[in-house]
Length: 180
Ligand code: HEC
Image 1 (cartoon, rainbow, N blue to C red):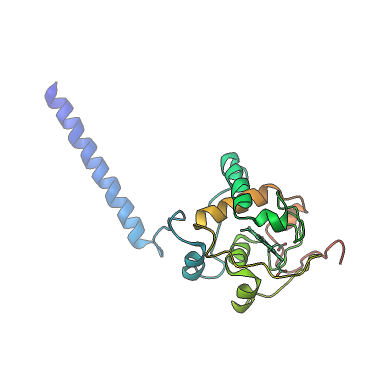
Image 2 (cartoon, rainbow, N blue to C red):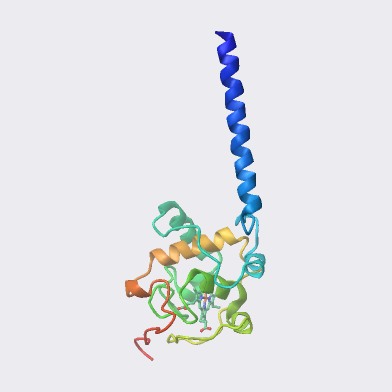
């Protein structure tokens, strides 16, 4: 009896060792080590990630994440300019289908991190126009980590109220703003 328990535990250890071996091999073979969004600043993440490759790890259907994002939007005072639900205030709405530079995860992450001026210096062009035209300030050094910013965007996406086809932007033909 005792001997069987011993055998089982040996087999479990072998299985665990094999699993660990597999994980480290995957990392070694992958093109990039996995990034821990909770410890990297938005600015460092932007600087180390090739253009077009930033993707939100969260979905706007994750209620707990969306709720945290709503609080973060307030705490980083995005709401002061964009309204409490991102629906627009003195600055453009984040929830409609007009995207100033593009509506994909990569572009909006870079816009908030670098600000309008920084984004344009990085080679991005204004594609759409909202009622309010002014610079978005750079938040890359203010937002504690990339995870906070992804949660904010999960919340913003959950409030989207535009044409579903434009939720993540329309690279070729952005819609005209309702009131030019
Ligand atoms: C001082 C006011 C102000 C604050 C604070 C602010 N923004 Fe903005 N934001 C703007 C303006 C103005 C624009 C339009 C930029 C342009 O036209 O170049 C903008 C644009 C954006 C856009 C693109 C919207 C679109 O339709 O394409 C997003 C996304 C955004 N802001 C998110 C945020 C988030 C998230 C925060 C908080 C971390 C934030 N903003 C804080 C003023 C602000």
